Image (cartoon, rainbow, N blue to C red; front, side, top):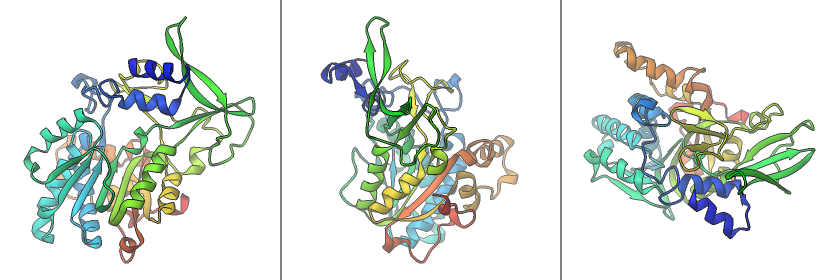
Length: 365
């Protein structure tokens, strides 16, 4: 990948993995999310690499919209902000559901929708998907200085570059990338470091893991700029004590291409997704450092059930019912994916988000 090779020349032949991952995903015209190829879909036959909840079932966005509508009403705000909107499917589902709710609450149709999207290719695809609401959707390449409204991030934090740490022979190293000219491929090169995981890892065995400075800095920034409203982040991950379990010795880094997963980010660079699970304890602490409170934390399955994803499902076609079950079942997306809710103090008191009404796990963070 030319952008990585150029960066290696500029840095003397070694890139920290965080920088390598950023280029592999976001380098203009070359990175995975910047090249304009199809990414989201239901099978390799449609040329996609992986499926997301909104693509799997429109009930995901319609159910999330109920939580959004409640949060808008409780916080007295009138805008939705989505980070990294993918195909635009989730935005379309939320807007359609809010419009359907408008006769009941009187406010749905007035909601403005804002999308923060760094990929020009994805912005174009989103605009096509959201053409019916073109007058109400605004795109931004970066966060504004102040935010008011309900913020949504579905599978955003997992795509933010991570720092890789490797304990080898009892010594912690930062894992980086170099180019092996003889073998004509990227290779791992570790350098000793003072950086550590947030928890001590029991044992002396070799151990690879991730820390998340970029995702946590993003959450802090969102928290500092959110004047009024609430934020809901949905992603796969764990609380800290599970994330850094001694048995998770290989870390969580994973790549996705053509609906197959592999653990080698150094091959097919720019042609496949690279992700890491989210440390939700780190997310909660970053929010609290910015003066924002945790509204709740639970599994995606419990969140959707609380918000009524099964309402009317008995009369739905079999394929629709099967898709919803994938969203909520523990052995599918229901348990691996989590939802965390955040709000500034002035917007967090006096109400409980419906998604956390039962099965709240905030005490596990």
